[in-house]
Image (tube, rainbow, N blue to C red; front, side, top):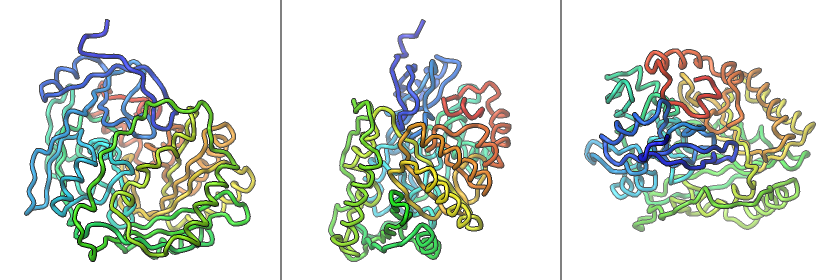
Length: 446
C-alpha cells in the first residue's frame, strides 16, 4: 500500500527513451528530507527531470522532487562565494549572481536545470576548453544519505564522498546545498564572431588553436552532404566590455512543459534535415554579420524559444551522443567516422565540436580532449550505426557521455571508462545497500 505522503506519476526521460510510472514525494523542510527518505527502500533525488537519460527515476522507485529547496543560503560578494540549495535553477541562480557582476561559466544548456543536477552530472558549458567542468567551482556540498546521515563534503572534509558525489549521478544521496566560488562577469552581453569552416578536420584544427582562449568557442557542422561533410561555422562568444546597458543579462522567466503532448511521429528526416540546414547555412554565410552583439540569454541558453527542435523528434525521441576524443586520436577517429557515415548514411540533425579540459576520474565526463556532439533520430538504422560509434570509442579510448546517451551499455562504459569499477567499489563502501538508484544506475550496474 502506498503511503499518503507518496503519489504516483508517469515520467518520461527528456530524450523519450524511457517511460515509467514512479513514486514521487516533495519534501519542503530539512526534517522532511529525512522523513520521506524512509518511505522506500530505493530512492533517488529529482531536480528538474531535464537530463536526457533517466538519471532521476526508475520503475516502482521513489523520486524525491527537490523543487522547493531553491533558496540562496549565504552570499559573500567580497569573497565571491555563494551557498544555494540544490533545487535552485540556473535561471534563479544566475539572475541573482549576475546582478552582482558574478557568475559561474560552467552552465548546462537550459536555465531550468537545477544546481544539484548540474553537480550530479558534472556539467560543463561552451567554454569548457578553458574553464573545465562545474567541479572546478565547487567548494563544499551538504549531503543527506538515508543511512549515513548528514555529511559536509569538501576537499578537506569527507573528500572521498565529495569526489564520488560530483558526477556521481545522485547515487551518494541527496545534494541539499552547494557552495561555489564565483567568477567576475565584467560585461553585460557578448560579442559574437562567425568563421566559415570547410570540413570537420578544418574545424578541429581551428578550435584546437583556441584552447587558451577564454571565449566560448563551438561549431555548427553539416553532415547532410556526403561530398562536403563537416562544413559549417565556428562561433566565438566574447564577453562584451564596451556595452554598459543594464539588465541585458537578465534571464527571462520560462516554464517549459516537458510533459506536453507531441506528435507520434518524427518530423525529422533526410529532407527536413537538409531543408533546415540549408536555411541555417545560407543565412549565416550570406546574411548574418560576421561580428555582432549577442544577448546573454541567447548565447548561454541557445535552445530557449527553440524547444520545438526537440518536439519535432516526436514520441520516438532522439539520441544524443557526446564523445571526448583525445588530440592524439581525433584525426583517426574522424576519418573512420566519416567513412562509416558515407557507408551507412545515418540521420543526424546536429553536429557540433568544442574543446574540453580536465582530468578524468570515476565516471566524470572530462578530459583534455575534443568534444563531439551528435543528435540522432531514434530509429533502428541510427541505433545500428551508433553501435559502430561505440566500437570507435573503444578503439580510440574515447569517452561517451553517460548522461546524454541513454542507450549506452555497461559493457561500453566499462571498456571506455578505466575508473568505472573503482567508482562502483567506492560507492559500495559508502552505500552498501545501493539505496539510491535510477534507471541509469541499474542499466550500468552502478
